[in-house]
Structure formats: C-alpha cells, structure tokens
Image 1 (cartoon, rainbow, N blue to C red):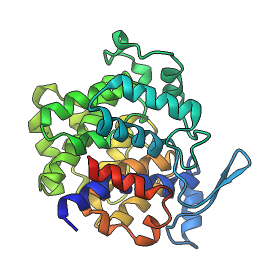
Image 2 (tube, one colour):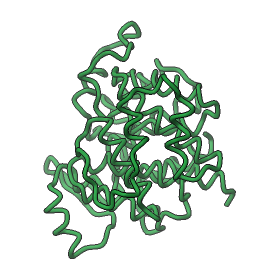
Image 3 (cartoon, rainbow, N blue to C red):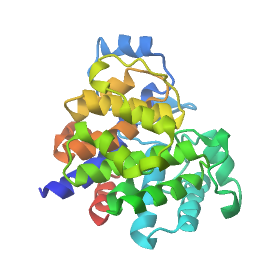
Image 4 (cartoon, helix red, strand yellow):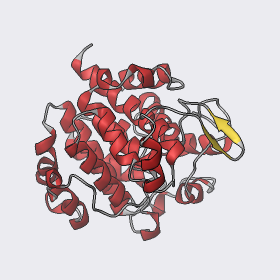
Length: 303
C-alpha cells in the first residue's frame, strides 16, 4: 500500500476503532477495567446501554461526527454552515450513525450548540469557558488530513471547533492534534513533533497547551495527570499514550485502562497512533468488525 494512503486510512480507521474499543468501558472505573483485562484481551465486544445491545464494531458520536466533518470537507470544502447542518442531521435523524438511526453519545455542550436552528456566527469568538470539553477534539482529525499549510490548519481547526465548542482551549487542542497529524504525514518522527508545533505556533500558542507539549512523556510510564473530558486533559492523555507506546494496539489499551471517557480518549489517541503507525498496523480482527468501514476508508482516500 502507498505509505501516505496507509497513514490517511490509519488515521480515520484508527479513530473509529479506538471509539469502538473504548465505548463499552465508558465511565467505568480504572479498577474495574483492570479486573476485566486480567482475564480478557483487548477486543471489540458487545455493549449495552438504554436496554439495547450494540454489537462489536458499533461506533458512537466520536466517529459519527468525524464522518460528518470528513464528508463536508470532501463535498463542500471548508464550509462551517454545512458542518453544522450535518451535525444537526446526525443528532436529529441519526445520519452517519452505524445503522442510520438514533444518534448515540451526544455530549451536553454539543447538544446545546446543535439545538439552535442556525449557526450563531457572531458568537464564535472562543470566549465561552463552559465549552472546553473534548467534543470537537474527538472529530477534528479530517482537517489535519486535508490541509497541508500549517497556518491554515490552525485557523480551520479553531473555527471548526467553535461550531460547537466555542472556547479557545478546545480550539487549540484541535489545532495541535491536526498539526501533529500533518507533521506525521510530512515524515516527522513523533519525538520531535511536540517541539515542532511550539515553533510553528510561536506566541499564539496558549500557555496551557505549551505546557502539554513541553512535557517529557518518556519519563511517565504510568499516567499521573488529570483524567477528565476536558479537552486539554484528553489531549495530554493522547500525547502521553502516543509518545510512550510502540504500537497502535498498545496505545489504545493504555488509555482505556485509565477509565472515565474511554471512547473519546481512545478515539483521539487512535487518530494519532493510527496515522503514525498506519492502517496496516491495526489488527485485521478489528478492522473487519468495524461497521461501515468501507465508507470510512473511502473518505480517508478522498481526503
């Protein structure tokens, strides 16, 4: 397989499979997850919610919203109104879900933003401190795949985040993830990418984000940071796992073992490590179970 195509496919499929693997453990304690893995290998499993059993390979809002964004970029270029409309169609009609019905996993901030009939452009200023969750970080990877200019990636990541998560920290987390993806595609080794992002962003980079990028993760065998659905914490978790893992599968298991928002931790991590190690590094036993995998692969190739 062409090396570049392998990384594009690895990014989106890696995100989706991370979502699928992490979803059954969402909001379970780290202790209970450790007990599970003492007797089981990491694999896609059925999971139940709201008295309905979802099969192995079923993905949640992380992947559905990523698909909406990827489709929008492929079909419309960068059009935030189209992005917003696709997210609403997902929420209200089940568009881009595994079976085309019943959206699953919507976060409170995403729901608040999408219940408005129209995108409120005048409010997209990055100042809503209540909108700092990881709901835009989980979906943003297609921007890093589509655009090559680093400054353009930053600008589009911020704007696209603000469609639902109008806080500068959430937006900059998206920018950092997408810059990482682009730097991977440009052939950079993972060890130098954090410092490379700091140089690219200069004084525009928020201090909180720079602190994450400056951290020496090689010294953190066990994760000691805050574990939460805040975008900055999720970015830190993903970078820790990426920088301290030697394979896609290892990186995903490490973040699931942390507990809490396991599907999004694994989706964001999976976008990074899937891109870095490539599609062919993801176990075929997982890729074969992923629902609608052909469509996700097609979007990656079109991007």
